[in-house]
Length: 351
Image (cartoon, rainbow, N blue to C red; front, side, top):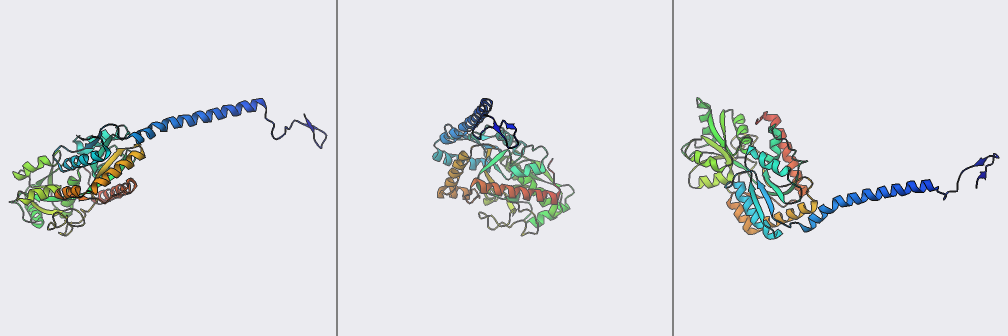
């Protein structure tokens, strides 16, 4: 019923609880729309939740960006054998070498984020986009850091009949009528980058000979077809034990535990070769957090094994302290900043 206002006019104002049929229909449509949106969101999230709860339901693959036989491959297979005992599914190792890890990296970035494909890679993951225009991926939006596996450093090695010290090698390079040659595991690899930094800091000219991984370097180095090589400390230790090569210096801020008599470049007056170097597991972006956390726990459990630690030390590798995925992500971000700083200081561009 209409009410008479104080001014004598009639008002059509309804009571506070009165709703017209048209308004009621509109509200019902809005509520149905909200319910449909909520149902759609739940439908999207359910597969991820189900995947996480049932993971792993089939074999998991670790993709390695280097050929079989190299240090990273050896460690990947050792890690795979131990992890599969924890997750109760086979862990396969897929070697996809080439293009300075870009083949493997791009493959994993495009893989389904279902928890069955992971990348094992080093700090090259963040250094590549800094120094290579062909590295189109984004290390922070295309990947999720899962677990930091181990830390590593590189060493400058020469044939046994070559220079007896880094100082003598530098003098030899300066006196040579043509640039001396050096090998690395690949164009744009961390070893390549470190070697170029060494040459720049020492004021020498050297010619890079890229290989697909470390294994092929050995033959040419032993036959003195190369004047030097920048290789992992693990390989340097193995080859220098019986005098097949001579290690002259190591990267990093301290001497390698496995080669305590090997001085760092910094000790020998060559600054700058100190960027953090690590190897870890990375998942495609959008991999369910529950899966990332479960694999992180498995890797950290393996790292705590005394037997695994012994095998890692035998390969001149230092197991990284256990980190959560978030802590490892902070390490990755820090190392990216380090490589950006190195690039700005040296002006090095790989391609």
